[in-house]
Length: 116
Length: 114
Image (tube, rainbow over all chains, first blue to last red; front, side):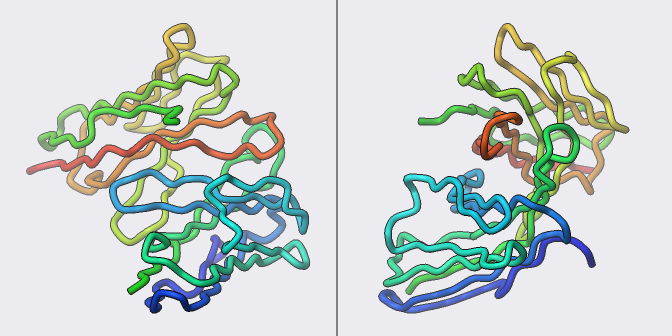
């Protein structure tokens, strides 16, 4: 399967714990995005990488959240001191990053986080 | 601030019927309008997309109609099938912007009955 992959698919944690999610984009895709989706809502943009550079962060991304893409390939999203309000599906998407057809974003299956 | 408004919230269509979902946007800088299909427990999958240089795009049973002056676009699913039952999201972005981040609507839950 050459699509976007995410790990783990599900994560249950207690409030106050730290969690880390991983995303492997489609090979050769330069752009990588993180979105958050709560029940009954559309995905909301969190942050975006062009290769290894994090170029934009949403105001939704509090200082408890940090994302990295160290070698311009896979990315990690860490949430520190989790809160119940962090419970959501965390989606990763990637694209080639060229305007036109090559700019289409392809999503992974998501990581569902439940904070107890 | 909700920049993309989607309706209806839910839709029930009989097999063989036409499903129509509407979206309206506010940001005139948006220049790329995709539709995504999402099944329970899965990530969104790109269905079809349109850019404002055309007013309609058709791929198989799926058609996007785009009205730039009204800042509205819609998805039409012809000959709807039970397998089309899913949640559909419209989205918009500035394709030539730095991030091309997607702004999504709130989704339409489609149920196609036999």
